[in-house]
Structures are given as structure tokens and as C-alpha cells.
Length: 221
Length: 221
DNA sequence: TCCAGTTTGGTGACAATATCACTGAAGTGC
DNA sequence: GCACTTCAGTGATATTGTCACCAAACTGGA
Image 1: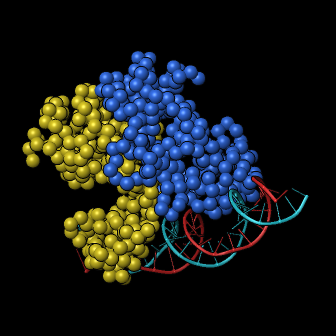
Image 2: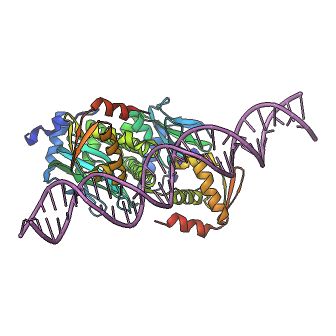
Image 3: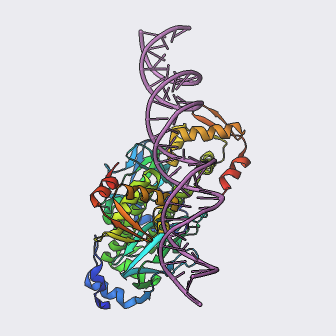
């Protein structure tokens, strides 16, 4: 994908028109990140806004005790507003963004960001929509963690992670970090799923055998 | 407090200067709400932005099973950005805002909001700071719910609710709805606090007796 | 002042989830 | 093949949530 095409992918409520795209690219710089690299975090506060052109950034939060939970993922065409929140935040927080795949992103320095927000209504809408989207995402996380059952959440996540495939490459520890729980809990629930014939497990891999059965669990309650 | 003075109270990272204040008031309308009224919710989506002049709005989320959790409170001088998120959201959400006290607020219609954001950098900063603040608030909620112990969270909340006093008027059910847990859980923890001499209870009221002891619990882990 | 109805809080039994302390099995790199 | 690491399984126990009650404390008439 050429760099000139990337804003085509900004889907959603506020796709950016050509003029805005051009102006954005004028002030922006493209960066590439390897999978696994930390994009931002408590020790690594960015001073500019990030727009994802290609790849996925996983935003997660860590507890003192070492447990993690995934808050949301930033996909191609979206911006990572938490970085701006981090810029403005005085308070402590412990969210961090990790490149889940190799990532291509456009970096927009703060002054250029301010100017675009001021002068381009379409860009403004885009940014506000991005913020709103993340707020809603976090509401969902709170709802899940506070009120959701772990088997339901795991079934949901397995289906989501599989995408169009029926295979997932993930350790129990990684799944635990998705949901903010402990490895042992995941092991036990997966074992239950196995015994019911819903999945098959090998070290580091899960095969979804009965998608309908998993969906039934994911949709319950 | 006269209406002309209210923006004086917009403290924080981006207090609004006089010119912005004047422009804001030109397009705005003041409303008053009784304590207990619903400010916004799934059935009651606002089409304008709200700035709190006086009072407190409690923003909480409800589960299907009837349990609640408080996400954050909007205090005088802050804006309620979740209303804008609600405007833009297509997805379902179940957060709602309730006037916790009698409330005075300024309502800013969408077009005026857009214009101010475009033309007043100070206003823009204020709005972005408000969004960031809420994102950070929600990160804290996620952290608490996913990783926090209930006794620690309750001790924290008791101290916060008491403010400068040592008295709280709240039922166990209300405290459970603060933390997103069940009444029985609160009853048991409070009973434990009582037995340890940290608090005294009467129907609907709690007196904090050993603030230091409570702080020790709140600060643990 | 008494009584019925409502709200609030207490309790035991049990279910779900988290923590801890292990064990062994499966992969990895000499 | 052998040490070494990573990954998964398991029992015991602690914490939290759910359910089904009961009793005490308030409320508002009659």
C-alpha cells in the first residue's frame, strides 16, 4: 500500500476527505515498528499523535501483582487517542501499547495536530469519534470485568481471536492476559471446553471444533 | 453564584479565559436539575454538551443482572464528555448520568460546540483535557475492578465519601453500587471493619472512627 | 399508639473465581 | 541425549458472588 493511499482506510463515522488527507501528510512522518515493540507506556510518553496505517496495536493495563488485561486494539485506520490522554495526564496510569504485528503509522506532531483540529472540521470529527469509540470500548471492558462470567468472556475472545479461521496460537497465559485473570483459571475453563468437545488443545494452540457451541456460551446471559 | 461567574470555576489544566467564557455564554442555556434526576442514559441521549456549574453528576453503569458500578463523578467546573460519546456512539452502552445533588448546568448545542472548538484554542484544550481525564478515570476503574481487593476499595471509598467529615449517609446497597459488588459483600466487610473498631454503623449511616486504620487498609497493595 | 408494609441489614450454604505451591510434559539449544 | 526453559495440570485454600431466607428498623396511616 503506497503512503499516499493510507487515509483511504480511515473508515467509520468520519472518513477523511482528500484535502485533509493531503494536509495531514504534509506535516506527518511515517514510522515502522516491529511486532512486540512498545508503542507507548508509563515510561515512554509520546508527545505526538499516532495514526495507524497498517497493523494492530494492543493496548493493555498491568496490575502491581503482574496480571494484565487487554483494554482494546487499535486497527489500521484508527488513531491512538490514549497517547494524547497520556500527554495531558498528570495522574499515574499504567496502560501501555504494544505492536501486535509489524506496524506502519503516521506520527503527527502536537502543533500540526492543533492546527488541523482547528482548521479541518472533518479531522475534528474524526478525532472526537476516536475518543468516543475508546470511551465506549472501556465501558465494555468495565462491564465485562465487573459483571461478566469468565467462561462467557473466554468463549467470546476465542471466537474473536480466531477471526475467519478456527485456529488460535496463544498460550493459556496470553489468554489470561487478554481477560485480566490468572492462567490457572483459563486452563480449567479450556479443559472444560475440551471435555465438551468444543475445542482441541495442543501446546500453544487451540482449534475451535464446535463454533456453534462456543457461540451459545458467548451469548449466554 | 451569579451566572456570569461560573466559568471562573473551570479549574484544571485548561481554565477558560474571559473571551471564551463570554462566547460560551452567548450560545448557551442554563438548566437546573433536581437531585435524583437522570441527566443522560441509553433511553435519553442528549444532543448537546453539558458543562456543570454547580452540583455533582454520578455516572454509573448497570449490568443486566441489576448490579451497578460508579464510573466517575462530574463535579462543578467539569464537562460531561460521555454525553458527546453517546451522541457519536452507534454501539450499545449502558452508562447513565444521575444528578447526585441539585445541579446547575450550561447546555451548549452541537453547532455552537463545533464553532467554539474550531475557533477557541483554550476551549479546545479544555475539551480534550476533559476527554483525557475521563479515559484515565476509566483506566482506574478497570484496574480496581480487575485487580483490586474489595476491602481495600471499600476503605478507599469510605474515606472519599466522607470528605472532611467522618460521617457517611449511605445504605449498604448504595455502597455496593459504588463498587459494582453485591450488598451482602459490603455488609460482611463493614461488619469486619466494625469488629475491628474502624467504623460504627447505624441504619443508613456509617461513622469513621479510626481514619488511620482505614487508610492503612486503603493503601495496602 | 398500634399495626401493616417497606426498607435495610444479617446469615448460612453454596458457586465461581483467584491464589499458592507444586508437578510433569513439551519444546529448545547445545 | 541432556540440561534448561516454557507451558500446562492439579489440589488446597482464600476471596468474592449468589441465593434464599430472616429479623430489625423505619414509615405511614388508622
